[in-house]
Image (tube, rainbow, N blue to C red):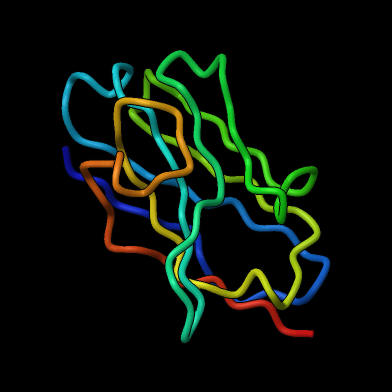
Amino acid sequence: VQLVESGGGLVQAGDSLRLSCAASGRTFSNNVMGWFRQAPGREREFVAAISGSGGSTLYADSVKGRFTISRDNAKNTVYLQMNGLKPEDRAVYYCAAGSIVTTTQWAYNYWGQGTQVTVSS
């Protein structure tokens, strides 16, 4: 599985961004997909995850109510809609593919290269 993120950029606090992650392979709908992020000087942390069917989602408390994860299995793509962005959301955002809906990054076997999100105050 190869994953390619896009959609990052520089925005102001309160703005919105939608990240996309395009996956290769014919078994995309079998994979749990997750989003993680890593801010400068900090460890990578969980953001959101979605089951293969899209029927189950999981969010970090820090983004709950502001971010929405979704997927389009016909397009082999997972999205992260980010609303009400805050300066503390600044990070490199990674998508990942795994087999269970979990916050644990070690459960995800495949990772993208990341896309930078910068939020100015």
